[in-house]
Length: 238
Image (tube, rainbow, N blue to C red):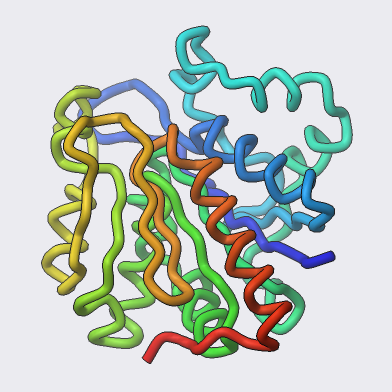
């Protein structure tokens, strides 16, 4: 059994609109149950602690996933989600892997959060997998600020500029995630068809492109955890 730290956004506001954002629910529930069903323990944390905001759009019927329905009937998962721990109390030594779901919220808080950035670097330096999906890879920006060159040449993916345009939120966000990751030197990869499943694994770093990629990204992290168990360790990122 492994212990996985999942960091959720605490940010709900958007720019130039009254619409709200937060965690995209399926990007939490899909990975959560992937980990739990493999016998792993999941610990939830967020910058503000407590219950994180949920993007209202992720609760619409067209975006509901089987894991969302499972969550709605799971009092223990709801209790954990409603009482996330304070991010600044987390240490990488206590966990075997890190996973960061999206929703647009990370563009504001995790992209600038010092604790999150340090944790990512600590996990990687200890040879532990780091997974992120959709806007979750925004947290890599702070890590790359703390360790310049971290993303240079790394194959990663995230919510693309095209997908951002298609959901009509380009004018409501502080920056385009794909563009910023490219500026940091990442070898950015994307599926040719928007909103299709796409996951990239480069060493210890696993990234998923969009909500549909959340479960597959978690499964890729689980594969790395299995590899670490068999080999004893995974080479950390340089």
